[in-house]
Length: 126
Image (cartoon, rainbow, N blue to C red; front, side, top):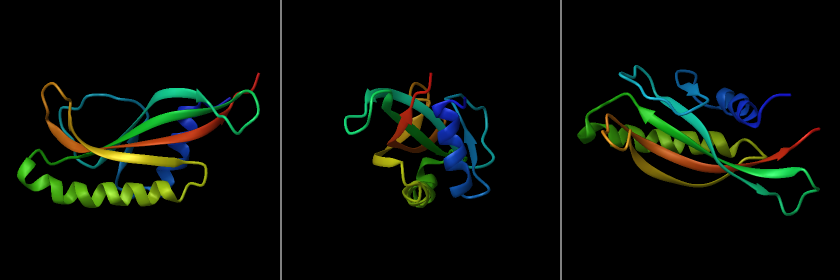
């Protein structure tokens, strides 16, 4: 059985720009050479309109730009987050709920990006 995280990565990867790299977990980077999208789960809830063993999983997709220059990166990032949101909108079962700018990692920012929050249904099989 494929994990919920892998199912999300498999659905998202083909709709994003080909030169972006999807990483199915949070990690740190010394350097970036391309736009990165990190995927991580932040919560699980019962899906109220669905039968038992159907859950709603909340994920975050953090889009990071390789530029380290805060004076120049935000124009690119504004376009990139809109491109990512438009791509996520093409996936029927995915419901994005918002996006916020981030500095990553938070303690000692090296990169800048946007974190997009979304939910997906997941049906647990025994």
